[in-house]
Image 1 (tube, rainbow, N blue to C red):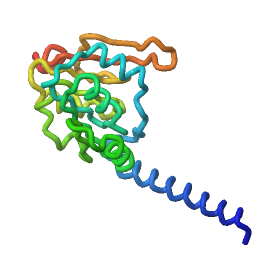
Image 2 (tube, one colour):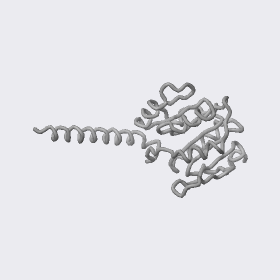
Image 3 (cartoon, rainbow, N blue to C red):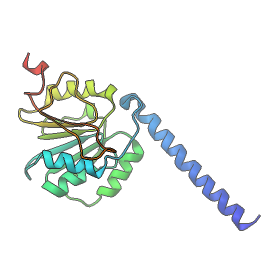
Length: 191
């Protein structure tokens, strides 16, 4: 067999294995994500949110569904906050772990956010599918401390009123970024 045929077979096999890992990874996370796929948050959206939500070094930042961990690392790099990323997609989790390796103050955990105590967080970030947002809102209502801020990209928290709605200055990334302050933003918490 020719060398080129062997190279093609090896490359095609490698692509097939990667695609199967991706399918397996997505299939494992569907019960929680309700079909949402891992999509990286753009640098513009991260910068816009970090400009609007200043943090202090003693703050605790949690990204629910951190994907590759870029938001966690950016928040830590800019404000030196203790940062925790939670991810259930195995491939996204592995990528986040590798990219965050050796960064003190940044932790990445392969966990369902519903099973993690988030009461220590001063700032919560999420970029999740609309079907999951009700679960997020309910968890936040029971665990957040007064004064905590919540940032949600694209999709609002049901039953919450944003303090601010940002739209990055780009037609490509003009989807809203909702910023909430707990408990003021939570209509149900005040009833």
